[in-house]
Image (cartoon, rainbow, N blue to C red; front, side):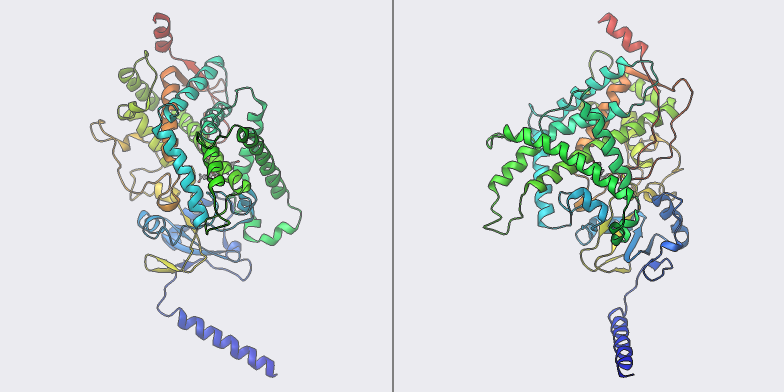
Length: 503
Ligand code: PLO
């Protein structure tokens, strides 16, 4: 009897204390929820997450909460709210939730993309940024040169399969791999290397199994039971790590501290100069190096190759857009030279098309989830420490109050009335995220997208395959929003062929 009274009294006191603490605080509206299961029984798992979250806005508004099992999560759309999360209070929300799947990929939160906000993350990010500067500044080790080389190899390979029904996935993958490989290791893979296909398979499988709202990420104890999905992820991550370790081992032997030429060199040099045993500096271990390389490698490959495929698919659906781009290439570049980065100011139709593809099919429709490192606020609402934040970029890029006919593919929305200048019709657009966690490779990605597409369209016409089937534009949800496999025919353009003959 006594113990019952004491427990009741304590519960009551706790309840009153909580109420007092929260006095004056306002929280976002929350979906219905049950103990343990949270809001899951009330959520529809048929739709892709970003589309379902967008539908929920009709009922709950542009900021709402739900319980992802035991985890409190908030979804925001609308640009001003997202800007508060990513930019204005960027530091408050700059961390990442620890999840079973991303922990497997990142060796328990190492590397950059999935690691917690703090000195370690900052140090590795800075080292990657310094390597980017190397490749932007040095004329001998320059991104433009590297990308053009790979664009040339890509076009040669497409010319070899000219007129055949071709799935462009492998060629796009190889081009992106070889650019990032030169950045990471200072060398590249040959087209027929068997590692390429192995890599493409495990990378694709990892993308598909991450961020799929897998139940283990919500209830970590599920991993104690046999789980096919998780075993597959572990196997693929093991394959990836083995391949990277092999590459690191070979390159390590060539390392000279006074000649830093790529990301691995930069990390090895930092490791040699690291005084973590004497000072408070974060540690640099081989595993950290592996995970950082893995992040940059994976991000560089999956995102670029995916956007190139989306662009090709949209151009197949909208041949009139493709013709406008080609007309501009013919006028501004012609056939006597190949495209360079400086042509960006001139090829407005291509630039606007790339912008539109990144709008209508963002690489990461919900970005990567953020985590509140401290109690903070979004708009008038209090956000407790530890809240998972989903920024619904999909909804922001498809907001009908910001975009005219957002469901339609209209590259000209990024051009002024006279089609003479690129414009930004609204600020509700950030395909690379923004704030402290902004995509570190944005510059490289934009350069690759422009050059790969310009080179391809200067030489080739894109035609539907023999079965007349156009690519599905629906997309498959994963940590990268990928297009389903499709085929097309690359046909050398008549004008290009004639120019080559007369040259
Ligand atoms: C791609 C598959 C690789 O095997 C591992 C990998 C590492 C970094 C990830 C990347 C994958 C997918 C795209 C990600 C990137 C970090 C940043 C980038 C999530 C899973 C994006 C789009 O934010």
